Image: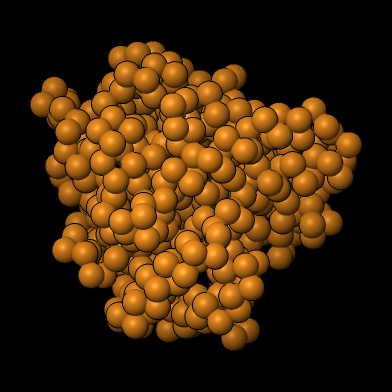
Length: 416
Ligand code: DGY
C-alpha cells in the first residue's frame, strides 16, 4: 500500500549520511558493502543520482588489490564493535579487512538498465567491479576446485548460519584480548550470534592483522576457509552482468577477463552441489566436509543460471518442503534441522534481500509460481511487520533492527 511506499522512502532518506547509507542507525552506523548495493537499487526509485552516488561511495573504499571491504568507516562512531581501531587495516578511508557478497555489478546493471547510469561513470564502476571480481578469483578461490570461499563468516553476509559452526569451532580463540560487544546493547541477545561465536570472529580478525592483511596468505594459511554457495552464486551472476554491460559499452578488456573467469567460477559453483543433500551447500576447504542441510543460499544458484533440470527437481522438492513448514518463505536455514532457530539472525529468519535474489532467479528459470510465493511472502512480512532487519519464517514476527535500509529497498524494488 501507498503508506508503506512513503515509509520506505523515508527510511532510505533517514539512513542517508550524505552520499552513502547506513544499514540502520545504532546497530550498524557505517557503510556496509552488500547493503549498499541493495540500497542503490532502492534509491533508484527516488533519485538515479543518489543511487549512483551510493555505488561510488562504496567503491571509494576499494583496496589496491581490488577487494571491496565489507565495512567502510567513513566517520567514527563509538556504538559499534569491532571498529577501525580493531581492524588496523591502515586504509583511507578506514575499512574492515574482509569482503562481502559482490552484489555491486548486479546493482550497476540495475541502474544502467533503468537508464540512470551511463558513459564514464558506468565504465568507472564496471572497472571497479572487474577488479573486485579479479580479487575473488585470486584471493578467495581454491585453485584445486575453483570453489569460491569465505575466510570469515562475516564475509558470507550470513554470519551465524549453522553451516559455519564446525569450521568456526576449530578456530582457536584462547588468545583473543577481552572485548565488549555493542550489538547486544542494541538488540536482544537471543536474536544475535553467541559469545563463543563472537570470540572466534575476533580471533579471525586478529589472524588478518598478524599477517598484515595479506589476503592470499589469509586464504592459504588462515584458520577458516569455507566454500560458500551464496557468494559463489552471487559472483557468477555478477560476472554475467559485468560481461553483458562491458559488451554494450565496447569494453572488451573487461569482457575478456570475464571470459577467463566465468567458466572456472561456474565449475566451482557446481562443486558446491551435494548429491547426498540434493542441494548446493557449503564445503569446508580445509577438511572437505560439506554442509548437511539446506539454507536460503541453496536457492541462489538459480540467479546464476547454472541449475540443470535434475538439480531443479531436487531443489524444488526442498523448496516445497520448506514452504509447507513455513508460513513465510524463505527461511535462512532448514526448519527441519536441529540447529534451526526461528529468531537467531541467520539460523532461521527470513531476509528480504535474499528473497529478492531467489525470486529473481526463480522467475528467470520460468518458475512463476515459486517466484510469486517468495515475493508475496516478502510483501506480507513488511505489510504486517514493517521494515525490520529479518522476520520469523513461522510467525512473521519482526526481528533485529528496525527501519532497515535494505528491507526498504527490497520493498520498493521487488516486494510491493
Ligand atoms: C555485524 O556486526 O553483525 C555484522 O554483520 C558484521 O558484518
